[in-house]
Amino acid sequence: MLGTGSAEEFIDDAEHHNQWWSDGTSPEISQAVHLTPRSDFHRVLKTTNTYYTDDVESLVYAIYGQTGIGKTTLLHQLVAALLNTTDFLNQNQAVELTSAIEPRQILYIPLEDSLYQLERTGDDIKRLNQVIDYFKTHVAPRRGQKFILLDDVQALDLDEDRKAELLELVDADTYLFLTGTVASQVNYSNVKTASTVDKFEGPWPILPMKFIDAIQTGKGLNADFNEEFRSRLEQYQSTTLDGPSPIKMIRAGLSGNNSEVSLDTAVETLSELCFGTFNADDRDNFHDAARAYLRTGGILHHTDEPSIRNDLSKSHFLLFLYKELAKYRSIQQPENLHRLSSIAATNAGRELQYTALSDQIGVDRRTVDSYLDVLDEGIAVTESHDYSLRRYRRTRLYLRNPRHLVLLSQRQEHHGFEDYERQDILNPEFEYKLARTVAFDHAKRLAFTLGAHDVEYTETESGLVDYILHRDGYVLPFILSYHPHTGNAETIAAEFDPDSGQHTQPDSEDLRDLDYQARYRYIITDSLPKSVVESESLVVQKNEERICYLPFWLFLLIC
Image (cartoon, helix red, strand yellow):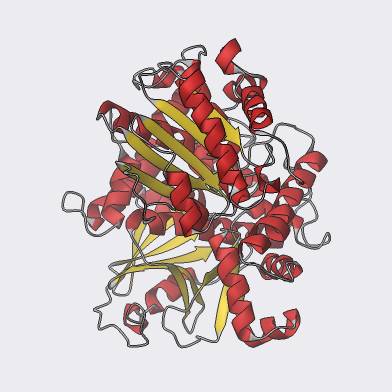
């Protein structure tokens, strides 16, 4: 019989991956301690701590994201934060779980590296059960919380019945953490099983670091943000730290459904944050950092060599397309996922006809739709649809990682952006493409925070309203005015008619009867008008409409 080994060999492999059982640490943990954690890590740690201090006995915490995005690093950092044998994250000492867990209470299994996928269907779960049973009976203390971390759960290729088998492994005093490549692989909240789990958390996506998180790392943005400033910035977006939280207040007011913070207050706070909280040097630093962020793509690397970074980023992305997404949806021609991603890179948010996409790929419209669906599930390429449904045969495609835009574009197009450091080569057209892509990605994040349904677009007689956030008639329209495509943004903003919106009922072609309202229109710009700077107010009046200018860096900061 072909296989990877006996139960004893799988147990030996688990001991190899959990060296902290005997040594209190491991090479992977030692490396993870020296990497700056991202906001996703802090969310996992603090949320888990809340359940722990509330005496929640069992928890399933689900995380998903692309190959190479940092899921494994996050799990290693979580182990490092929990272990009472490591000194990690002094700023989280107030979190009760930090440095509170004995090494033998933690089991980490990298399912792909441990070759569970080479076992026959059913035997993989059997081997996993044997390893977990060994951990519970021979390694972990008889009392106390147990933490089981299963990395790359997609290696098991589980259907709903076999998901139930996995869930049966979770009993009282067990917190189970799962990572996968798409949400459905780690979504266990609706799995029918005799096992009772107190809490399900997620699935939560791991994305490339957004702008404000990249600043917090203190690396790669060619701007002078010292530790004290970064601490203040963390406070500005948090309600759990002492002091004012203007970014949190802005997000609350923009949502339109917060009884304590009005939209007017949010817009006033934007001006105060821009001109009052931040001084001229801060604004210059943010401006330079935002331009640098377009190059880095928000990914942490273990090497400073640009060519190696690019090779790793591209290899991880293609591995994700050809292996993970293709396997997940049983796609026979995964190269078409690659081709659509390259089309998204070449066009960078330009309007495309579905018939043109079908002709170029050589498949019918339904197949193109299925490809785009799986790319969206993998948070690789996302569509933006028409706000008014008048151009429903067309779409705009955006890569979600700006570095992929560089790597999938033609050399002559991204000339000057091969390296991560700023060069003397000017390429404003490609910088605009990157800015457009990054702004869309951050608009998607803002939409999630505000509860908006999607990020759409619409055409006016004078030009494009690039990003429209909409929730049940409440509308936030954003126009991108970024050199060299500055155009007549104020005219576009004034022409935008929120009543042009049309949206269908869920699971129906019937239109919803909505009262569309847009009290402000927003212009995202890399160069504020002189009058705005002199008045220190981001709001101007154009005919009957109130227009709020947002520096590109400030828009990224609040998303």
